[in-house]
Length: 147
Image 1: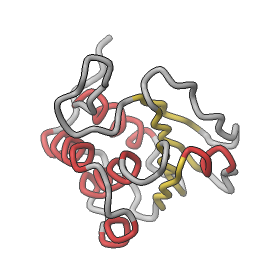
Image 2 (image 1 turned 120 degrees about the horizontal axis):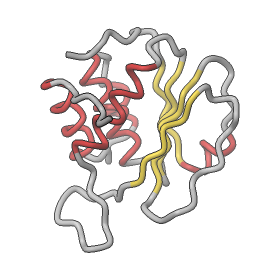
Image 3 (image 1 turned 135 degrees about the vertical axis):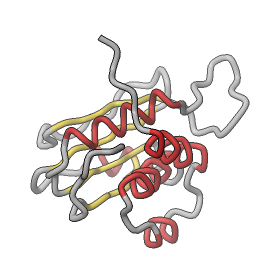
C-alpha cells in the first residue's frame, strides 16, 4: 500500500529543453528521464531532489541496445515520490515531454488517486506501458530496496 501523498501536489510535465531552463519557485522535486547512454539533463540546483532514470520510449520488443521501462523503474519512481509527500510540485521531464514523462505523471495520478483528465487531454501520446507499469506496481505495493 502506498503512503499518503498530499493531493495539493502539482505535476508539471516538460521537455528536456524546458526542464533545463526551469527554475523551481518553491519546494519542488524532479523526475528526470533520459535516453540510455545520453548525458544527463543540466537541471537547476533549486530542486530539493532529482531522480534520474534512463529508458527508451518504446512499449514492447526492445532491441539489444534498448532499455524497456520495467517494474524496477516504477518502484524507484514510487519510492521517490513517497519520500517527498509535502512538496509543492513534481516536475517530470523526458526528451520531448510528450510520451515518457506524461506516462510517468499519469501513472502517479493513478497510483495516488489524483485527477487525470487534464493530463490525458494535454498529452494524448503518453506512453501506455509506463503508465500501466506504475499503476500496477502501486496496486500491489512496492518492494523494499535491496540492502
